Image (cartoon, rainbow, N blue to C red; front, side, top):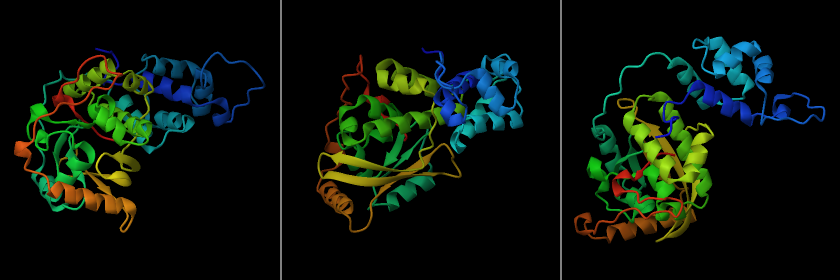
Length: 318
C-alpha cells in the first residue's frame, strides 16, 4: 500500500504547494536565470513567510513538529492557499503527534433526519453520502440521474453500497456521464484529501485510497498533487443516456448531528431545458418496475484500471 495514504504528511503538502507557486506568482524577479526546481525554492518561501530557511527546511522534512499558528498562517499566505487549503494545513500540522491505534469503524447508517429529508425531495435528484463517499441512500431521481445502471437498492447494505469516488475513476457509465470528467475527478480527489486530513487514522479510508491508487493511474497522479477542494457547490454538464444533455447545480449540505454525512442535491433553473430533462427523467422513473425485480449489475471497468473493481466499492464525493 502506498505510504502516503491517507495520513498526509505536512512536508508532502508543503512541497506540493510550493511547487505550484511560480516566482512570478509570488512577485519574485527571475532576471532570466535558469531554475532547477519547479515553483519556489525553500529559501524563497521561507523569506516570503518571514521564517529562517533552516527552520522551514526542518519543517518540510519532518524534523520540526511544533509550528505555531502564526507561522502556519504566514506559510499559508506565502503559498496563496485558499480557506479549505489553510484548514487542511492546520489539521496536518496539528495531527503529527502520537496517535492511538486505529480501530475498524462500524458501518455507517444514514441519519434518520437525513433519510426523511431525502424522501421529501421527490422532484430533486439527491443522495446521502458518508465520510468516505459511500452512497448511504438515494431517492429514485438521484439514482436515475447518477447511476441508473446500478441496482436501486444497492445502498441498502454496506456490502453493496456504491462509492462515488470509485465510480468516477473506474466505471465507464459514470465517466461518460460527466461532460467535463477531469473537473469532476479533481473535485473528488480534492474532497478526499480534505477528508483524509480530518480522519488520518481511518483504515477504511486508507484502503479506499490505496485501491484507487492501484487501479487508476489518473487517480494516483491527482492524489500525488496534494490539492484539496471542498465540494460545496458546483455546476456539472451531463450527458445522460436517457434524457440527453443537461446541466445541474450540485450542492452539498452537511448534517449538524452527523457531520460525516452530507445531503447532495442536483437542481436546475426553473423552466430551463435542463429542468425539462429532469421532469422527463422523473416520468421515466415512474414508469419503471420495482427495484426488487431489477437484475444485479456490477460496475463497468475503465480501460485505465488493471483489475476488476467489485460493485461493493462503488461510491464518492465531489
